Image (cartoon, rainbow, N blue to C red; front, side, top):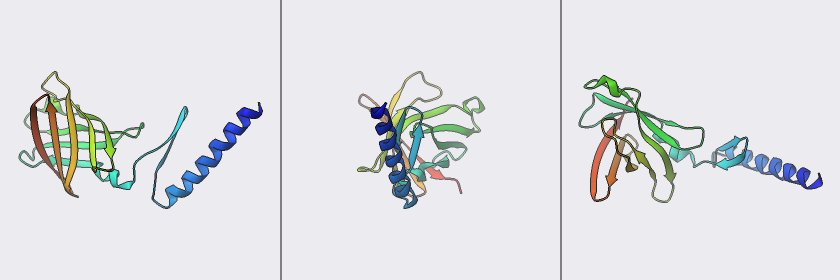
Length: 146
């Protein structure tokens, strides 16, 4: 019983310390029933929002942060193929602060394959998505919708 009380006390202290750090915009605290985790800095949150294809502006995707702290992207407006709308094409994107890159998986809506995906910023309003499988690579650019 004493051990359990000590564990709960330590958890409360950690939450209090991390909450103070969060107020200073250093970290964001996520508390889930089974664990406590720290997500990336605010820098990773600039991915969230709506983006349109640079070469094909009629194709738009929206990035959101999932409850587990990862990011995903789904098609929100594809005027050439409306059946793709609502399809999640990028998932499990995790931010790597050292390289300032999101790494995860991509599933093209018209293909039955899963690709490795790397998402990086060329500037605050331009994304570079590199999808690869074995030796094949495809690069797509997106512009932020303002």
